[in-house]
Length: 281
Length: 261
Image (tube, rainbow over all chains, first blue to last red; front, side, top):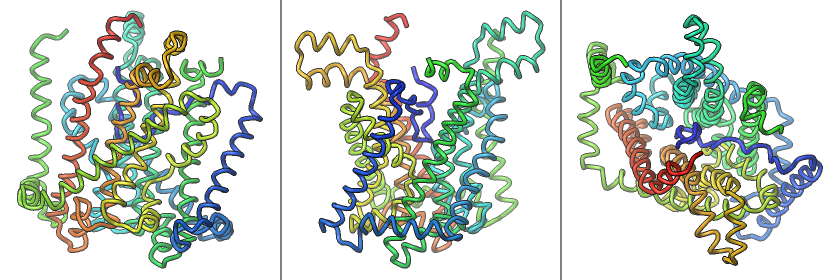
């Protein structure tokens, strides 16, 4: 019953919307709607902040925030922070993948290993990694190591669980066929099990990517590791409200960037897979 | 395949490995005697002192209330917006850029803003903040579920002159429910994470607050007890939701079993 995505409770991405198949050739109208939708939101923000429902020191106007953001993107310190956050995300996610895929492979292949580690995995998986922040702060301090550890810890579980599902979900007929043709075990794993697990691993990584970014940012906000989170923390401490809004918007843009990057990579890596080919038809 | 002997070994491993992990940790922590890594027995002792039931009402109950309220409100909003968006292509196209943006936003980035806008670090801010981020998994899954609806069902209902609100209540919502429920499960685990982050950022009560205070006062015992409790909350809520979902979707599995796929 459960699809691969919904099994993973750690992330919050229920899978990509298949690039609106209805859109077809009407690409231009799609862009037009996008622009309209964006303009509408900006206009709404401007009117709402001018209406005085919320005091100006609590909600700066759209034009002021965008001006601030424009000023920010012209400074080197902003881009340094942006890249620092992206670095924490990338190293954390990479480390998690390097660890989770082999371990998930073993736990998925061997019934015994899977059963032996079922309880620890099931117990550790739902633990919100954010709870580890104070511990990391006191042990590793506000360093890149603690940021990476946090991101990797959070990203590890979705990838692990998805890899396990993927390995277990291999078509038994394919395995039996290979076996009866005398294909050696190593070849079988490499040519059948791994490719059929790749879509699951990709899903796990997409979920893990969002988790890793959240945790990298959280580490910066709460521990003071350099990055966008630290800048945001400063803006808040010094009451620079406009900058606070501009930085939050920029963080959202980083989130969208990583998401788009991953969906595109997933689509490219899985060009051969029916779930992706179906869309083109 | 390999007989009952192998099955026994597996059951034994399933029981023995977790115990072995705890025992090794215990022995290692005792010999290392580090103040950062107390042995499990000491953590359990702290857990017992703190939560059973010393600070249960003052800190655990508020956290649970915020999680459940935020989750409930967020899910309701997600479904309420998701159904019309799932049914209308143009509304969906118009709304999608915003949905994609906000669901990609790391929640902690909005924490200071939520405090500013709501003038609160209490329940109002906590619940609204949790609710806001619980909307998206439910919303996206509702849209997907409604879009995946069998068009014959809707057309048949329309041909029989069943009014729109009845169609939504009796056909669209039940048919999309399995997927809505999958989104709600993701939202629930998200709610726990956001509760911790939001309470750790600014609050006067709750499990995240205990975490913050124990960090500031350098008390590792209560900190580990809080980490353990947060793990237990995440685990138990997920389990409870799985059980509830199994009951709510019993009809669905029966239907799936009866119809050839």
